[in-house]
Image (cartoon, rainbow, N blue to C red; front, top):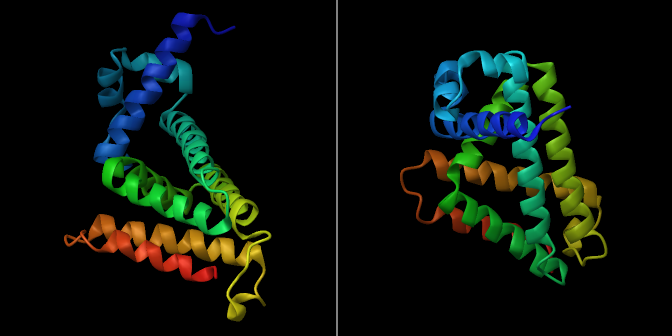
Amino acid sequence: MNYPEERNQSQRILEAAYECISTKGYANVSLREIADNAGVVLSQLHYYFGNKEGLFREVIKMMIKKYLFEVESYLKKGKTAKERLSSLINFFKEMLKNNPGLFRLLYDFTGLALWSPSFSTLLRNLFKDLSNMIEELILRNSHLKENLQGYSPALLARMILGAMFGTAIQVMLDEDKENLPDALNAIQLVLD
């Protein structure tokens, strides 16, 4: 049974890990640093999460839950497919401007997922859930441009998601960040 104090400690550890990784990267963060930022002793990390991979797996789960909730709330702001796609684009632009740490964290964990089966499953499910949201809330029952009508909504959803994440990487790596977020607007060409 988790007592409130235990939950608060484990939550503090998760939040500290999230903050440390999103600002410094997975490879540059030590468990000791996370423990110090959480205000706990190092053994508490092992007590709650077992090891570094266990802790980071829980950070990924926390990030995924937050990310999916935020994306879905933005998608539901619009009434039409165009409005919903516009809301999704605005979400990406706002995240790039106001919370680039979330993108850095996502990209860092995606890199780890290429090598770790436990991370791979989590990130694969995240991308699948995001694609499904785009398919269900934007592309189903929408009017696609005539030259795209031969493609399934599932395939187009993956293309949109890939374009958005690819553009976000470019924004984060490019020193001339001013105009790159506007490249996301080109994604709206998928719809009439």
